[in-house]
Image (cartoon, rainbow, N blue to C red; front, side, top):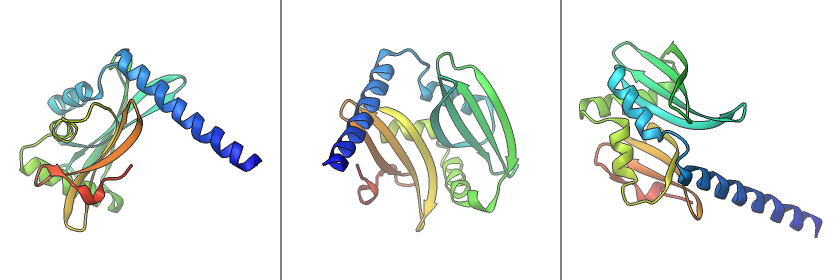
Length: 173
């Protein structure tokens, strides 16, 4: 009985955290991540390959990785969500672990697409807030994996970068 109660409390806590985060996003007290992405895309060469958010010292922070295939580099950016201020910027060379993201980034660049544009297409019919997005290339498919938050909770989906359509086989809750 105690284990069941503990499990219920954990699930309730996660649901409450998701609802409070959704309320925060709906309140509009932050710069939307797509706005910051578009700022990065205009100011830097390369393709954004990853977006995530986390709380640092009580503040919501956006983290982005920009791949520049020509320079063989990845630049990591951190922005404060409240006002869109750049907090950190650090570059490194592409490693073997990054090859899937690099392949997908090359495809996006060749198709003259942007990460923010793909996200906009992928979530156009969803009434949800973006919490994470990541490019990947696996099994011959370049795709964007998205994590969203709506008024019912969290959801994930995948979007085919080449054919510009959802990947239903990679969709899960």
